[in-house]
Image (cartoon, one colour):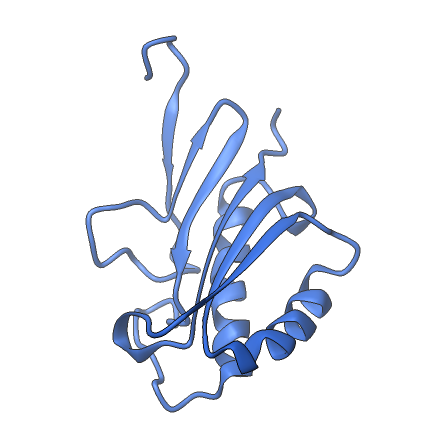
Length: 134
């Protein structure tokens, strides 16, 4: 609990990679779900460095969506998404994949070009969503 007595709940699912550091897949607090950055790793934690950007983006989104489901939420409840992408040339590819995956949902969004990411990945996505239980 926090100082106001609100419950701080850690969210975990086998549908997304287990954290390899000192963090949770997501945290629920006050009706919001804070999803940690999701790299394009399979649920067992393996990664395919040779996968193209499109495949990596879909894997990261799949993990994000699995965590949202485990937290009793869904893509329609996303409030803010931040995507870190290697290579500005990947921005249009990301936008197309993201648009197809989210459909009518239009959360606030930032896309941040970066020079590199952990494990040589090409994308990392974090998000804030509303819980369906609020």
